[in-house]
Image 1 (cartoon, rainbow, N blue to C red):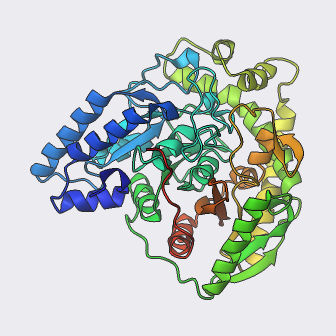
Image 2 (tube, rainbow, N blue to C red):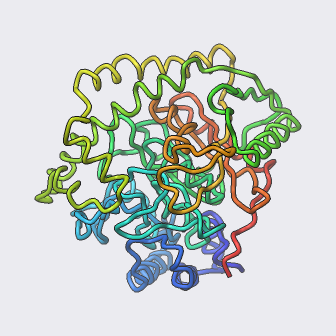
Length: 469
């Protein structure tokens, strides 16, 4: 049995059949984590504590106390509160921050028997997409360690993609689960806003933030979603024949890297061959509405929400004090500007919240209903992973483009609208970099989206593991 290749559901099956113990699985994963420490997937990694937790799980299993995730090692992005480990948010001011209780999303996994392997690296304060964290070092793409893994949940993407852990959690404000899922060759779900508990996570924006699962199989996403929401732990694949999926060529399909475009078109061909009805659709003004709503909401709420989080934890810190210690230049620049003349005025925030966001939500809803499509599909990112260090600009089709804005171009609008989004691995470029395809669906249809994802998994290429050894 190749223990490191096991998915969460595969590990559960092996443990249930008595072929594997949590301690044996944990030992194999710990050894692999130590061997590939240069990927820098973790901020907090305590092998002794992880092994002790696995031993405790084995004892529970022997006594007949078997949870839905009993003995499965998982990783958590290091902005999700844990009482047993620090929650740094990837920033120096919170380096020794030790919450008194787990975030609800973490608590539900642990209550189901999951064993937390460690806390993963992230873009500082979750404010970026490269995971080039100046405080804790960059996380590195397992398919090419000179490249970014995507972010801000980059460490979870690396850990899962590199087979350091079967699955884990990230958080997503503008693409922070889906982008690293795409660039690391795994699956990632952004749930409908507030479908997953929001408390106990170092915040950016309560209007946009949500935790979400990342894994190497759709079954694992379904399982983690069911545990966190109290829903079903399995989901049958959707019937692809006759399924209507929209293709929003404007905005989402424009100016794609040639390798990404090729894999995206191959994906559409595979869907059509399987009987999916592909419908050309439009989401009017989606880019403009995203710009009008997204940043005013996120930037305004960052100060309010982070101050509330810090006060609730009696940290003795406030937003200004945290920003003073920020190490990453890009994050420092953005957050420092919010303390001065670049701060978002409250009227602009209110307008974004009351006018532009509802218009964006209506544009999506109208697209789904008028075209009778259950989802829309597009490349998760317009290009494969950039080189580490290309923080300000990267090259796309021979032109220097802004790194952040380009990588969130396709994931941002759905985030602002609060609808569910699923990134699925769709292929490797000729240079061996993963490309992901995203499906966005109407609010509240997460389980149907997961069923569609399960069906797509069976017809899309299965990505080989990264060559690390």
